[in-house]
Length: 380
Ligand code: GLN
Image 1 (cartoon, helix red, strand yellow):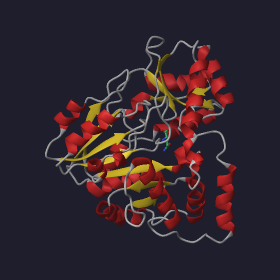
Image 2 (cartoon, helix red, strand yellow; image 1 turned 120 degrees about the vertical axis):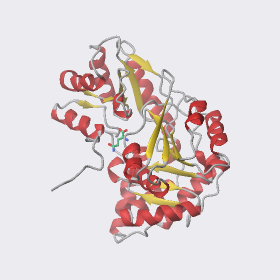
Image 3 (tube, protein in one colour; image 1 turned 30 degrees about the horizontal axis):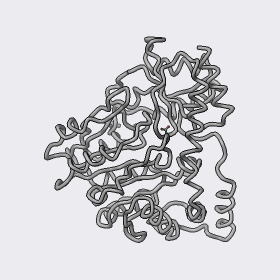
């Protein structure tokens, strides 16, 4: 049969590739971003309770009311917003679906979308599936800051959407209030939407504050904001996330969501709704992950790598250009095979596979695994 791929240059996502390689070589898997420690046993009990109570049929298309209510209350308390559970939020199959659906909602063929690189690998294929054109702006190493003048210069009458991600995967950079104000000034009085990927919302370090788009009224009224329970509650396998947007925009989002997945599994949503009622269940996260980051940094102190500071997420970048001239993909594969430590090469986050000789480690791992991996990396 004649067939032309809709995504000819897309292969298998690097996270799947590196996790598979890690498994094949029984390597310590610090590549794909998922914890190797258990989630709260209370959370499991809560889900189980709802399953046993017979909560096993379809959830409402937009998500169970109790979960939407507790999320909106949390958002409004943390960010001074006024999200309404009935109209402004939808529970999704992880943040990846939320991002895909949000992009599908507003991007039409030939629309331009500002993508800040390095960029999470699902963004551009989602834009291309909608017929959109990615327009790239690169963060500036070594701090991975954003030059907003460059963003402004890339805006045309075709710009439909700007995609931001803070805390930022893979760099660990965090947008500041000044950044958000700069974005605010750029989109003000325009027809440009914002997609703010905030899945690492509670993972900021050294006293840094998460600047949600929800805090800024002018941004809030044009933004989709996406979140992930997998990332914050150590349950990436549950595939549950959510998206917030103003009612009129969320109405359009739901038109697509309902025919993509219809709804997300019910007992898990109900368990999460109960669990979220206790603030401590998420407020402990910055300290919890900062300790992990610091443990990793302390263990890597005598390694030959150059460490790029991480202010958020559960990722740490290491630069190796002074050790080897190998391509980062080859280097990451070799470390997996020969050293038994799997990482992610950063070139996978650039459309042109730009190679700055940097790899990403995930530190959402037990202390034992972090220590073992560091020992191997120090011996390189
Ligand atoms: N977000 C995870 C990461 O950056 C990967 C999730 C996935 O594999 N889809 O590692």
